[in-house]
Structures are given as structure tokens and as C-alpha cells.
Length: 147
Image (cartoon, rainbow, N blue to C red; front, top):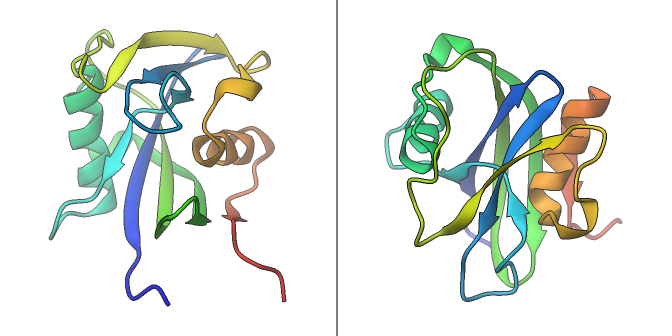
């Protein structure tokens, strides 16, 4: 039984009708797949503070926490990883032009039209958040057995 849940924050940078994705560089099955800028909360950190920090660390943009809008939460388990709660925020405004600040974790960044996402090459977890954003559904579950 899982005795804890991680909390991840995901940031949707939407420009017009495009969203920024990062192509993951890793030694696992997700290498080369697309993902939103995201990361785990640190001890004592609020979800909005974590989203602001991760956006700056990963893509170099500065976001005021007041400019984050909650768009989706996903409760996820599976793939041999710890259960997690993913909180997805849309950044309504930000300062700076996104750049790849973590080349050891990302091959690069790319803007994708929201109506032409690379569905077959986005990691399922952030894809659930993107679907929620596009449909207005604010909660989803992935990997839990149905009883």
C-alpha cells in the first residue's frame, strides 16, 4: 500500500492558441516524449509557489502567483511510480521568453497548436491535464482500479 503521495505542479504557458512543451531527456521510458514544464513540490512549499519556481527553473519565465489559474488536478498511480497528485495551472501572464534552462533534462522546447498536439508522443499524465484544460474538466484519475 502507498503510504504517501507526491504532489507535482504543471505549468501551461499558452500563447494565442499554442502551448509550450518540453521534450524530456531521461534514462527511462519517457525519454524523447513531450511534457509540460513541471516538477515536484518541495517541503513547506505551496502549489503556486512551486509552479512559479519550476517555471523559472525549467524555462526561465517569471510568473506572479496571482497570474496562475488552476485548470486541472489529476490523481495518478502506476508505472511502478509513487502515487501522485498533479496540479495544473495556466499562467495568464509571464515575463521573459521561454528557453531551455535544463538541457540535462530536456532536449528542447516547442510551441504546439492546442488543436494539433503530438498526442502519440506526450506523456499520458500531462496529456490528461491538457485534455482537462481543453475540455474544462477539472479532475481526472489515471491508473486506479475501478471497483
